[in-house]
Length: 396
Image (cartoon, helix red, strand yellow):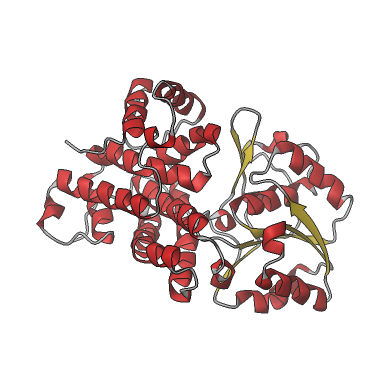
């Protein structure tokens, strides 16, 4: 029997999606017909040097040119979009308005494309748009094409930028893509480490969205499917990168996880932001934090823990014991981390224990999560970071 922990009278359930999403093996080969709807003659393509030289990307760029588009390539050389870089993009576009902005790459590339599309049509600097719904005008037509499976940037209304001392987020319906194209073939050559990091990012999106106070039935349904898909397919994609079935399923998981972010991330993403001081990639930071964040929240979401445990394969009498259920979920996620050689503690990363308190204070002050179901104080986060440093995961 389904647990009725959603109260249909309690709140308005909202769900935001891109205008159009295309998902299939070989989707890139059919994209020219979709682009005709924008009635534009030029494409500003944001990508990076490595992706640009891959065989699928070269074929795609050739296809665009042969279809009559003038393609100008902005080759990004940074791992995370910075405020200065995006302001410079305005000079690259100039006064051009008869164009499509296209992002071909991982999450950072797609975030760059999102913000670039609105800089071309709105007065002001990037800093003016940081926050919630501060963009006035529609951007240039925006097409996003992920080459990884996990970030979900191609489906969300958020773009994360690197500020001087913290992450900055532009959140607006105006940066939702007009078209998202997901072709699993683009992920076949992704090396094992980024495969694991981005895949665990997708798992974080799903689990955090379920944990979130803003979870709703649509978020729950998609997130549970993501959890199952990642658990079964990420190891295959990691150890056998050219397994097209595993890559297909991981691309599907990533897309659904992006949709599930309508529920909103909770503390694992905040912890990941604090680990940026140590040059920890975002997906890796989420993976490191996720078991501790599940453990922290488990006591207040027992029914949701049951749902997640079932999605991860628990089908015996332990499901009726909240402690055993929570332990199963935490340990399963931790075992995935171990399988991918992801650190299980800050200590194993060489981070000083004294840093725990400093990171906890930053997490509490700069990256609050009011949608986290378990209320927390700064002291609670200090304890959680101390456990994160030692790797303590026992549930009592």
